[in-house]
Image (cartoon, rainbow, N blue to C red; front, top):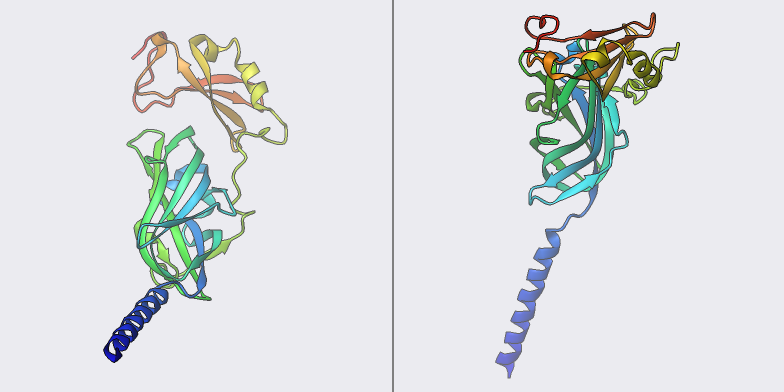
Length: 277
């Protein structure tokens, strides 16, 4: 009987040790992750504005599980976040532990260069940076997510992508940042009423009717306003006889004098009058 009692006690001891080991692996506290966005100063200099809208942010643990957050700031102008300038998007509470990846889910992009409305895309619909960092209880980790703009050849088409070499934990991977306010980095309102004179997009479309724009093509829903030149740029779907694969034409409507003209935005020679590609 004594031997049986010892066996039972041994089993209980092993059980207590095993349960205690499981509990010790669980997080014992939480910390804060601040995620900032910045832009590498490269092709961004070609843009008058580049608005990026974020739908959500995901932060991944080492076991591939993740936490999902809606950023406090969902839209910003990348042209105002160059170099060390960075905008804080979230301050999220996370369990202490090790994390490996951050993903930005982009819901929309709109930009304008000196050539007019730019075609800017996120190839996969999201931006992702893999970088190991650790959340420590009652501490804050600031992580900079740097975004770069890459031009496709000599066109007015661009991709945005993460810049890993300029991203990471402040003080470890990134030397320093200059935090800017949301007001400073707010989105450029390119599709409002234009300048103070108030030429709306509806008025610009009305002015374009019966001009060479609608004689040689059809107005598209893709449009933007250039504050410097005070002009509306409206995409054009050209009639077959005027199509040219080297061109990305736009109908340009001036707010100052109400003039309307086609800007062919060609990478080669302008197509001869009345001839296609």
